[in-house]
Length: 163
Image 1: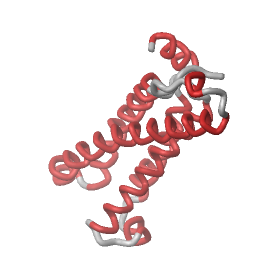
Image 2: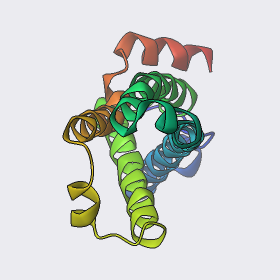
Image 3: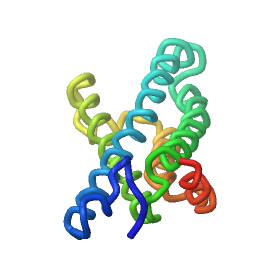
Image 4: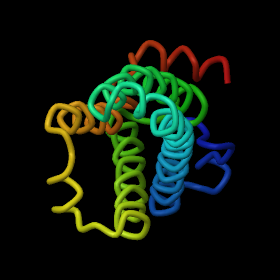
């Protein structure tokens, strides 16, 4: 049996496999929501800067491509933080699940913004986007989903000893 997750030790509850599994699922959901919140908040702030400052000066494609490396750094830092903070006892598959939960939340929120604020269908939204910027964006989404699982295992093991 593994160590405590988010302060809850399966040993303190008993050896109930269902309870242990539920605790792990809740921990993955919490970690995914935290990872999403950090990256979304940074992306939202960068989006405001992009629209108000970079877009008028450099155009849509350049502004979006300027934002991409900063978002990649945010994704890596957030994945490092979340694996150190709450996913240190997770298996690689649970860390991948953390990324997938975060991706699901991000796609849901961004789709909501497209539908309600821009009043576009997804087809209209993607038809109006620059192809290069869209490919970079899709690559970042893939990295966002995978990054918690891509954090080096030695980092995850080392950080769990210091927690």
